[in-house]
Amino acid sequence: MAPQRFQVTLEGHGQANVYEGERVLVALERAQGFGQLKNLPRRLPVGCRRGGCGVCRVRVLAGAYDSGPMSRSCVSAEDEAAGLVLACCIYPRSDLFLRLETPVVVKAKGERALQPV
Image 1 (cartoon, rainbow, N blue to C red):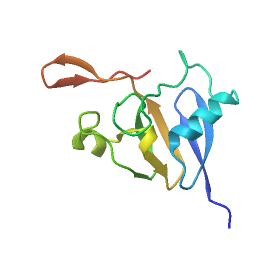
Image 2: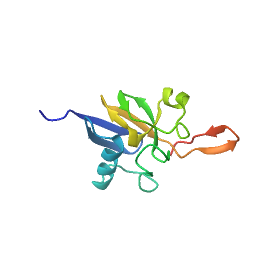
Image 3: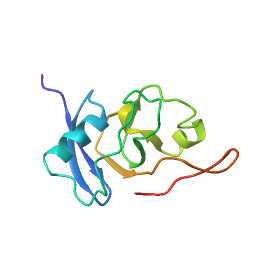
C-alpha cells in the first residue's frame, strides 16, 4: 500500500506534497527545487536537520501532525502548544497550513520575539 499523501501550504509561498512518514522540511525543499514555492527571500531556512538549531522554525496554522524531539532551547513547550515547531521534526497526519518564522531574536534576557518571513 502506498503511503498517504498530504498537501502542505506555506503561507504566501505555495504548496508541496508531503507523504505520510516524511518530514515536512524534506517536502518543502523538494517543492522549492521544482519551483513550486515562490516569493521566498532566499532558499528555505535549513540548519542541522535534527531539531537542535531552530533555523527551520514554522508556525502550524491548521492541520494535524506528529513531532519528533525538538530542543527546548529552540522551541519551548509553550511555543509548541501554540503551533510553533521545527519543520525538520514534524510529520503530517493531515493537510497542513504553515507560516515561515524567522529565527529567534533575543530582545532581553529570557524574552524572545518572532517575526514572519
